[in-house]
Amino acid sequence: MISNSILARFGRISSAFSPKKPDLHSAFLHPGRLPQFVRDCPSAMRVLDLLGPIPWQTFPDRDLKRNWGQTTIPYSAFSAACLLKLNENLVSMDDLRQYLIEHPAFIWLFGFPLVPSRKYACGFDPSASLPTQRHFTQMLRDIPNGSLQFLLEQSIQLLLYEFHSLGIQVGNCISLDTKHILAWVKENNPKTFVVDRFKKAQQPKGDPDCKLGCKRRHNQQVKSSELVTPSKMSVPAKTVAVGEYYWGYGSGVVVTKVSDWGEFVIAELTQTFDHSDVSYFFPLMHQTEQRLGFKPRFGTFDAAFDAFYVYEYFHRDDDLDAFAVIPFSEKGGYKAGQRKFNCDGLPLCSAGLPMPLQFTYTDRTIAIIEHQRGKYICPLLSSNQKCPIKHKRWRHGGCTAMMPLSIGARLRYSLDRTSEQYKSLYRERTAVERINSQAYALGIERPMLRNGHAISNINTLIYTLINLRCLQRVRLRLPQTT
Image (cartoon, rainbow, N blue to C red; front, side):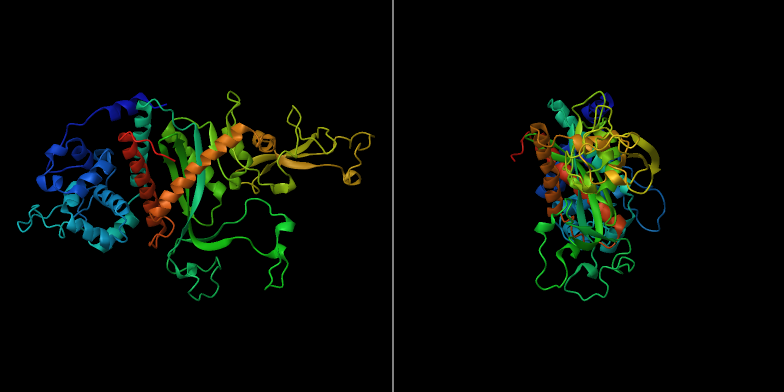
């Protein structure tokens, strides 16, 4: 549900507009008050319709009155220019600067400090009013990511308001996935000779922040019969590593799908490539709850997120229909549905008898969070009875089980992955794949940047642009055909 304060804020129409110090939102609300040279620029009016709905007047900018030794460039103007660069598929900051010079209406709209000049019909010198290409690049490294998260959050709130006005409930089912990002270093170029290309202790000189990681590793266990011994390598097939290694980063994203309208981004996080997929879960779900105002009932993930705390997060005692939709990864030597439990939550041994809990302890190493684990032992050890199935480990202590005490550990095994509800919800995961495809088209996979903070900032802007494009479709009331 959307709070009344959000509805009131987006329900109001601001009447404040000053030609001397414009902002994109005021220009969007009052296009008739724009200078003639701005209204005569089709590109400017097209981009204004895309970026204008965001309340730029409340953008958390830096102190513009401080003497920086040179003309202070507002972060709001720079952020709008970066969104323009992404939307127009401009490759470099030099291309962006040249595009702005050729379209001075953007310089006026975005709020860059103007240098008056009578030589130009717009009344100012476009080139002198812009920072250098080097300054643009430095600003991308310096701007706080929190300022860009403001733009992403506002795009989310605008979409929630639009769907609420259409009577559409959004956010009950979310999808989470990660996207690999290759660093711009020679170690990632297979045509360049590099000694110890994948030695994690040897940091690439091209990017001081990137880390070595692996992608395309199998989440599911591979049967020994499916492994083939390489014909040109005298090593067993089981010793061949499965995966591709790169220096770079990872981008985690939470997406929700709206039937007949498309999908949009709710939360995003960029980390170095050495972080596991599950490390994105808690930070992204915290963002998701804050922006939606409630906890989603369903979550769809790939098998990399097959962890007890993910199931536990979506489990509710007052809503038994809510659950996490995750394929079983078969780690620990068990298959889906192979481990059974009784009504009290005790695991059953191979003979179908409940196994008593012998002891518990705090584990700080196996999972990314501290949790309680317990050891369950054979129920026949304390009696003179013999194992009814003559288990092979009967003489060595019988069946034992080490597992978390969390209810999520039991849900992981007991989830019915053959039900129609599970299959229907799992199909919703294609939403995050489509978002990743849009992000790929905007250049997220191979950014020509050499700084972790800059890559994190450009990723936030990419997801903001994806949301703004979705908002534009919704405002035009044109359902997306899939």
